[in-house]
Image: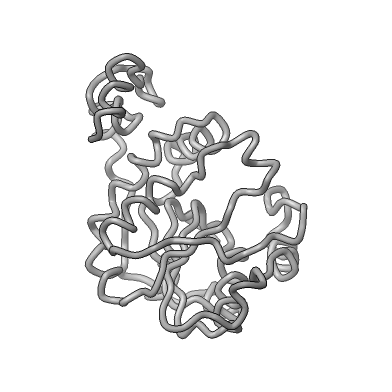
Length: 234
């Protein structure tokens, strides 16, 4: 922990975002030791669909559409506890919660490092979102990944639609995603090898699947997805 962070923790300690208790865990993670233990059972299960982790013997997700990403990794399932935390992280600027949500990275690190990624990619927040949410929800995760994988990160995507995915039906999310993004001009046809695309949530997978398609169309060999939270149902 850096000196600046230690000073901030001393003068402006962070109480637990879940219960309000203050301890050394809440200072760093935003979650106290008690809440950490009580909510440590969010599972990471790689025994079902090997591509998207759907808990079904026959994966409706991967067999019902053109899927362009190779593998989905996630750090926690999105239960009510995680749902509340991601809302606080994204809309109340409790950026320290990204440390808590990234804790399970060590469990899948060996899987990630074996894929020999060229770079870590992410989606920039929109200009309107930046004014409300100055901290990227995946900033903590990306920082850890860069250190562990010794890779650079950048955003090669440009959003060309002002519409939001939230509030749309399952079908409309895929329709909207197909026309919502493009590759920035300076990155056109410049991808080679494997890439890890990082996002905060995987709900329907519409956005990350579309971004993976754009990367493949522009030269990438393989795109894997890593998200903080994955919904139980697609």
